[in-house]
Length: 59
Ligand code: SF4
Image (cartoon, rainbow, N blue to C red; front, side, top):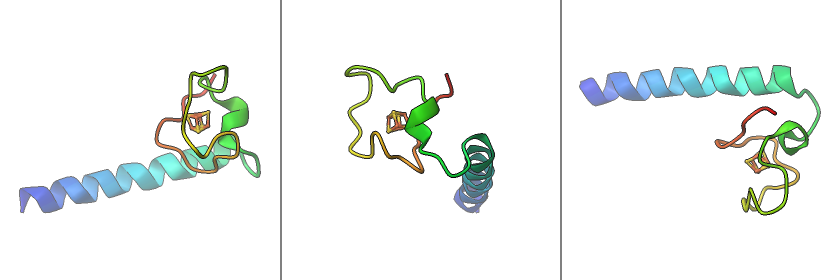
């Protein structure tokens, strides 16, 4: 029961984050405004064309 509540909470947070990211960078790649988009700071394969990213941090 407790795990179910945690999963619901996580799902709510992920949907809110996805909504916020769409508002922050509509129609663009997240990497364009990400603090980790320089040098070797990010090695994720999605870079530089990430549309979703768990590590995204606004500049
Ligand atoms: S952390 Fe994500 S959004 Fe940021 S540069 Fe890397 S892939 Fe792009």
